[in-house]
Image 1 (cartoon, rainbow, N blue to C red):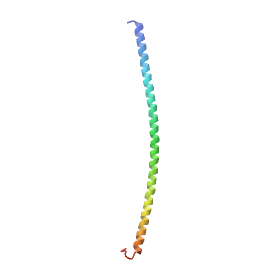
Image 2 (cartoon, one colour):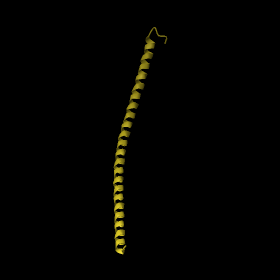
Image 3 (cartoon, one colour):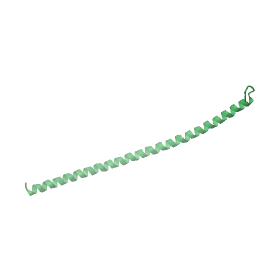
Image 4 (cartoon, rainbow, N blue to C red):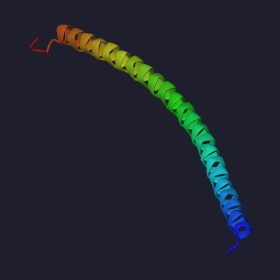
Length: 90
């Protein structure tokens, strides 16, 4: 084999390797960008779910407070009914 042919083969091999490395780095960069976008979307969805959960928690607390007040009112009415009912043992 001539020296020229060996040099050409080595140069072609180096160019091919450089192209493969370049393509791999571009693919990796695209994948990283895609992962960043996906992560941002997940964070946005998580933020929305957290806000919805907090709102639901506040609504549940308000409803529980209304239920407590209604139970107290019912108990007061029951107590008053027992006081004025002549047939009641209370």
